[in-house]
Amino acid sequence: MIAAVALLAACDSAQPPIVCDTLPDDTLFVHQGLSVTPCFEDPEMGEITMSVVSSDTGSVTARVVGYTVAIRAVSVGRATITVTATDPDMLTASTSFTVEVPNRPPWRRGRMPDAAMFSGHVSVRLVSDFFSDPDNQELTYSATSSNRVVVSASLFGDSLVLNARREGTSILTVTATDPGGESVSQESTVTVSVPVDIFRDDFETEASFDDWELGSNSDAVITQGRLQVYNVVAGLLGWIETEVAAAPWEASASMGNATDSVFVGLVAVVDHSRFPAYLIQIGTDYETFEDELGRTNYRFFIWDNEREVWVYADGWYGTSPLVADVGLLTEVTLTAQGGDLTVHMGGQEVVRVDLVGRNLSDDLTFLAVMSWPKCCETGHAGVVDWVELRGISVDGSSMAGSRTTPGIGGRLPEIRLEPGIFSESVRLVPRGR
Image (tube, rainbow, N blue to C red; front, side):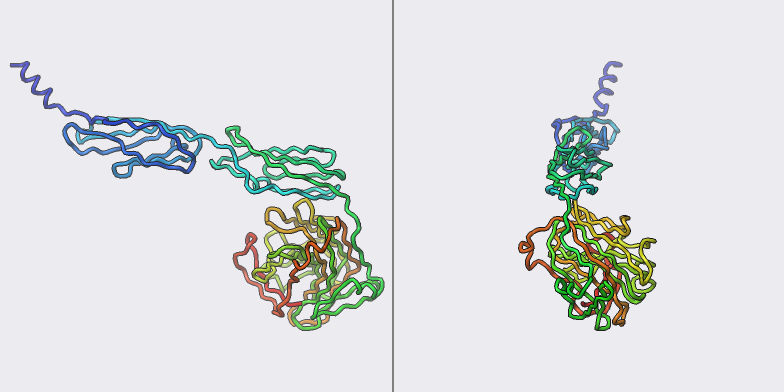
């Protein structure tokens, strides 16, 4: 009798769920996902609930979605996914499988461009612009120069510093390596040249005007060996230009303002369909740009041909003790070489723009002097003692027709903040020339 009772109790005991099919191991790349349907049966036909656990959620995540399990690869690694079925009596059954997320080598992003530099100059470029990692891992970089006598290369994080030492060429190799040791390299040629004198005008006589062309709203005189450029129509720019062709190049001018009602500027017009001009402007400003920039005595702008505005970004303006007062002269230099555009005043760098990273041009086609008067003013001159261009002269015919002179339109200046092509840029609608 006792044996029969025991047998009956055994038959009435609950049975745990049963795994009716196993799940195979799988491989996913970062950002990939999959859905699997585990197979469980309950002997008592009770409702089964599922839960899932990943042994490494930093590599692979898993969650239950209805009757399936959604798997997603997050980072390189390996995880065991355990799916558990629970019946109404809290009895369980589990099945596990492995998901591996393999490491992939970094990718090249675009082509690292060749660089043309002047001996004695330094260039800085971000190498991270030319590599990416498909697994979102942090890359480390190394760089070598095939001819360190010509140019040396050193890295500070992802900033590559090129130091041009002497005339010649060198092959630059930059390698990006991921944490798993996978790597990829890019090469570019660095050519170091000694800049030569291309153009200089000391404005000793009016014969200098043979090399310059005045804008339609402009006039100019040469007095005591100095060029004075001014506007003749209220609210419009004064402008005078000369045709040149160089790449790389270094343009310098000794310039200033005759009164506090005008801002003189040196303009480099380049071969670029959208951003064809760079302007460095000097003069202490208390009202024209102050609402957006604060008080400044130098400002660097780039002409946006698509929107017909001058744009600028943080770091392109400020106040420097090297900018002379009204009636005095400041030596200003614009240099485009090694993938950088720099602005120097009195030998000190005040602005640096990454031409390569911003997809800008260093092919110079024109130099211009601009006088930007305050609103409704006429006849206030920007003064230039001399203008000089050094660099490597190129055939200007290859750039013929590429120039678009900025500043045409006859509009009064208007300043307003809006999103732009450059980070936190401010839009400046120009006066016509």
